[in-house]
Amino acid sequence: MSIKTALFASAAMLLATTVTASADIPVGHLADQSGGTSDVGVPYAQGVSDALAYINSKGGVNGVKLAVDSVDYGYQAPRAISQYKKWSSGSDKIAALQGWGTADTEALTAFVGKDEIPAYSGSYSGHLTDPTGKGTHGSKPAPYNFFYGPSYSDSLRGMLTWAAEDWKKKGGSGKPKYVHMGANHPYPNAPKDAGEQLAKELGFDVLPAVQFALTPGDYTAQCLTLKESGVNYAYLGNTAGSNISVLKACQTVGAKVQFMGNVWGMDENAAKAAGAAADGVVFPLRTAVTWAGSAPGMAMMKEISKISDAAGTAYRPVHYMAGVCTAFYMKEAMDWAAKNGGVTGPNIRKAMYQKKDWVPAGLEGVCIPSTWTDTDHRGMTAVNIYRASVAADTGASVADLVKSGAIKLEKISTVDVPRKPEWLGW
Image (tube, rainbow, N blue to C red; front, top):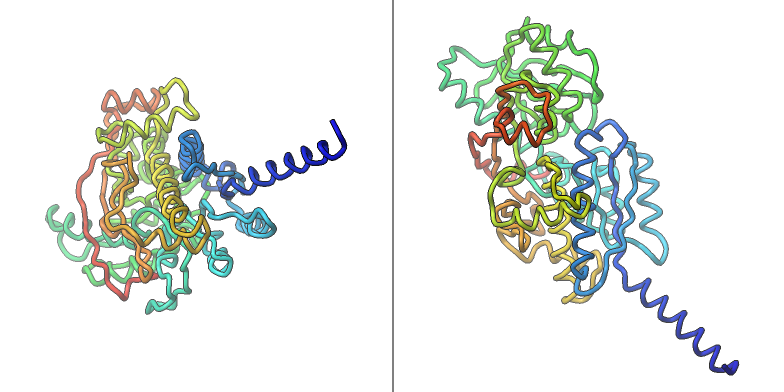
């Protein structure tokens, strides 16, 4: 081979490598697989990861693969910010972010807005729903933040609306007593004021908030407080791990309270771990069915699951399914962007506004129809309320418990929360 031919071949190889590398679409994925919310962070992250790998197995976005970098940040906001700064600088700047927690997502809001990087997170804080910053409660602009599901505030508003009716149906006399519970942290605090305001409007006697940590512990003192004050309805704002400790402690001391769980506060795994203490807990669900349910989109959902469970035997909790839906909204936005100027942050954002009552193709009956606009990032305000039912010993596997009916997640109501302008960003 001549020197000229060799140089030409080397240049061609370098060019091919450069084109291949630049053709990939960089995506950052922040996950909590070891921190304070890993009890629900692990299945959610697995759903996102499996979905993105499945998308690549089907050709990626318009024939281009996603280059996904997944990082366990341990639910530590400073680590998330540091990792984001690495992803958002240099020639391989990410086109989009799949995120997780409230503290870090809110901390990154200004950064992703400035960098024009769409961020799809597992935080449903109402503060992330106002793209313009014109909300009446002082919310900051969040033009590049998206999430799939009702906000924490709207979910709580929906459950409180249900609770007011529940009190009447039970023949309750006088004002029902309500209390907000959770850690003094941006995540459980996000819907606190919104919930307490609506509770007062609905006729509840709102008691001082009761704090408990994001980690499991002995919460006997908190449960004794509930019992002594005669609380009727309590919102558990933490994730399942610490909520389970509260449920068990309150069962032990005999505190008769109707608990309303945060969207991350109850699932099939939590019902198994808490056993009889979880029986009767109500909570919002972001998908139209559970893993045991029937819907056209479950066929694709179970194919996606085989990415990390080739045998197809794993039972996936509701958080896994929500992670899949979230990833596919991003994917379809990228599809539109690819055909309308390229897969850039601004184009992905524009794509999020192109459809109404949107369900990703192949996931019909699983992902709930959602609509985002350039003035309102509340993708949905309908709150599907489920009740956990635990009817027997929970020593078996989750799959077997669900199959036998020992554990059930039963839909009891859908509350259409008004899309009030004054509730935007709050």
